[in-house]
Image (cartoon, rainbow, N blue to C red; front, side, top):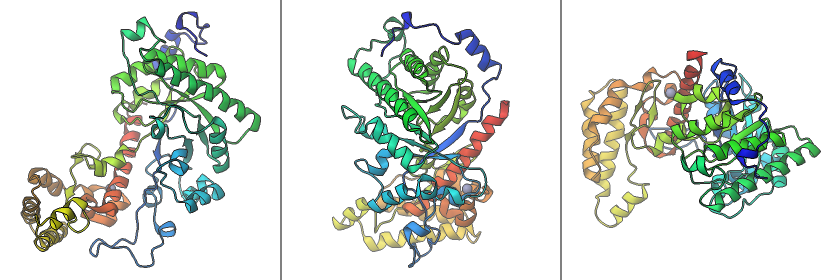
Length: 441
Ligand SMILES: [Zn+2]
């Protein structure tokens, strides 16, 4: 399967021509953003004052995905991993899995009920979930069946991620012989699977568009994988394993790949978010990517929790003394007075609400937050909180989440608030992306 670079057959397009093409703007397709599903939904009936859901709430029926809350949807499509549906540590219940197969991916996510542009659906294997295993747990046939049964628009072939990266000069001296033979083995396996996947696709002819995956450990090895996939017959190729790479490394790979790219090849960047570079990516033929980071930063990041068009704000932490595991332990160990904690916590929420209604000055919630932080032994973040509260960014945002939830969207506390902030971030991210894409075009 491996073709040494020196003896590779003549390229269909010379590197100078390819570069001229993207420089002159031949590559001007739209770039679409897919959001990987992890069954993240919010409960529209949630009451922030009582901090509880409506009694007759039925999760499956009433909870809403980001694309149902924010109109138009804050992304162009949904990416669903097979591993998430039926792999180890799956997020799907048996009932959900059955419903997905029965209804198909479009109806399962209620995409058929949306107004506005049609959302795309893409399936992949979730290769990071089995990255430590010797072989992927699925065969090309397994995933082909999964995509066909769920009726996806796009389906990505089975791949095995190479976690290491090697830049020049080693890449130039020994382009396809990595220091660790395991890397080459994973690439070879991924390419073989891609060949089998496409063969099966041609025989059975399901509706979805197949994508082969290029895995590599360096610019030249990625280019090699792309070359092989194009020869097999792929016009859509996903670039895998680039999540941990720095932006200049990704660009080096894209440059090396552009030397062998056919003009009709489309690339999908798996798990890569760099809106600032999206125009550059597009020049190299990238027409889609997926990422969870705008959503996850809402509650995983230390500082960039709430996005706006030009910056990010820290969300106001108000920990739940009764449901935070660590705090409960400290209460049980007699290190924290639970009643005092409860009253300080309630004071934070109450003064934040009053501040949002212009009933109290900014210093009032800041004082309450400082007291609660001191009580818990947490760091004092008054200066950061002051910026968030002073600017009241949720007032300037037009998304449905901010309109309905007000200041609650900026409070770091519990899944209903945190996921709402994640949805808002997706909306802002999507707007940033479109802004970047329209600047130069
Ligand atoms: Zn918003």
